[in-house]
Length: 469
Image (cartoon, rainbow, N blue to C red; front, side):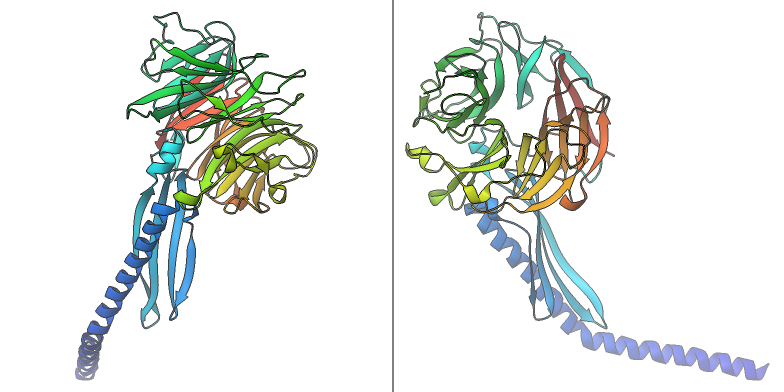
């Protein structure tokens, strides 16, 4: 018994002395460790500050970076929430001691008021949750629909018959507004784009830009600041348009300019209007003939504000170039719009491009159903003047008629029966995959705003809430 007790005592003594030695070792290393923590924290703060300064002058080009400094890793991870909002994490990883890796990291949001202004306020400012689920939806019947856009919770919906426009404040309205002043658009719209615009007098008003299905007066502007009494403020014809498809097809507002397209027809299919004064829009130049139908548009200014280049991205019905990029910088000053041939993308197969979405440096494109090749594509659009690298593709098994991006999610309207509206996870371009779907017959347009999902079908607008799961 005495021998066992002696062995236990010796073991306890060894443990105590080992602990004392370890404590002395840690005490000696503590100043060095604390200094390393302070240095790492300062380095991470400096990385974040550098990114913040870049975002202030060249927001589009703030992207993820990684570098090695004295065997330590410095990284900036940037995730695009929307064209005007980025979430950034700056981190400094280092070997503290004994092979243990520590990290100092900071996460913040970068917002671009300039890009928000360029987009007319149509830019999501809500950070999406890591995972989401869809609530039960509600549908607002407004007649046979042709087009729509959502801005600040108000849906502007094109309809087949006079007044050719319905306005619904969602989700509060139970039906579309009855216009008290007898307002009507001149013709049914094929596309609508709403924008909040600060006028020269400093007052912000909401304008609706409409691409009309008519042979003249194809471009219209309405002041919809008062949804109960919109006012038609301007109607303009497209210069040089003739042939079988003279009607306006698509419209995009971006920084006091409206880009209007027709389907393939005689004369120019792409037009630019100066809408600095929405009450008096002026077409600049004579348009650009591209011998193709453009089905979707997106725009971005790149570079410091004072010397930025403006790019226009287009999804087209064109063999050998379904994705096109145009330099429209000079068009802001009365010059020409020029296609960049090096950036043209020819997708495999003969299917036409139908939709696209631009979110930061990533461009998504959807096309007609293939059956033998993917319908959804992701491109690196960080350098639009050159060929856009393909960074991912996926089989949607249906035509993708419209899309909207929100952080790591993509909302699609498709031709797949029973799954016409689909929500995809696109956080990894190389592993894009569907998350959920909704049966909305003949859905053909989508929008996302403030964690609300909008889907347009011929019967009306369906509204769903995107909730954290």
